[in-house]
Length: 271
Ligand code: NDP
Image (cartoon, rainbow, N blue to C red; front, side, top):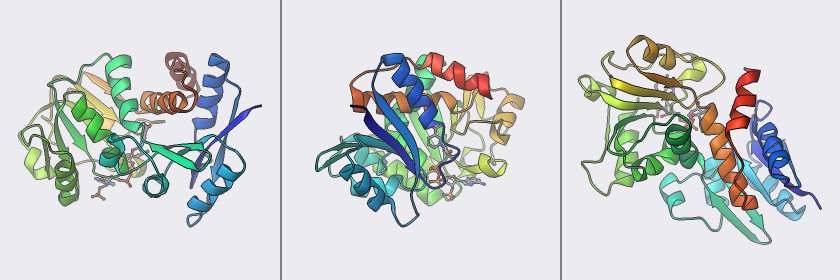
């Protein structure tokens, strides 16, 4: 019998997840279906409960429900406590297992697809919203010397404090405080690109050979343009992360790890 999965969000029509999981299923011979479900803004928990009763095996969760999914899940691995957000639910009878695959997706894309090691690299993470929370701990675990900057600097401090094991490795700050600093990797985890807003970054922010990574995908953002103009050696959008986080969810559900490279190529060809 075909096992059913879905992605739940609001809005959801733009989601590439059904297409990605269809390609994963074909490639691995897994008998699954995967659909996009629009949940009402006040109806996330009820939607998950309906899917559970109908026998769905799992779902991905996207904006704006990741924090609610964290509250709903009854079990999760320890790294999810730091993220406080969940993008993957595994439905197993009465048990709802929550996980967050965004961080693994980002680290895999940078290290395996782009071939850039993060260990001992100075990494600037811009943003302190749901996406930044999801990726901060995996970046630290990959060995990054992490600085978090956010428009609302209190939130950058709060995120850094929630992760601190060694203050010299992770810190939070305001944009003013990075005026004279340079980084080996600058990761944009803000939604500024959605509205074509520039970030107040100093032009000297990119160290020689630096990576500029925007978690947004689908188009060149002002951050990516700024990076090309100010010396970043590698500039990437977040399409690879999207496919990698999906592969990690697929693995959690099916125990099979799909090849991501052909899926990334197929999606790039559509852009
Ligand atoms: P949130 O709404 O939770 O957080 C938004 C963040 O962006 C906050 O830190 C906010 O700062 C900052 N921000 C918004 N506008 C501006 C601006 N004009 N200037 C400076 N900072 C700004 O969003 P998410 O964290 O959930 O998502 C962030 C981005 O990451 C989105 O574009 C999303 O598409 C992308 N993403 C990509 C994924 C992928 O697989 N590629 C996975 C997950 C997310 P403040 O706190 O001051 O308001």
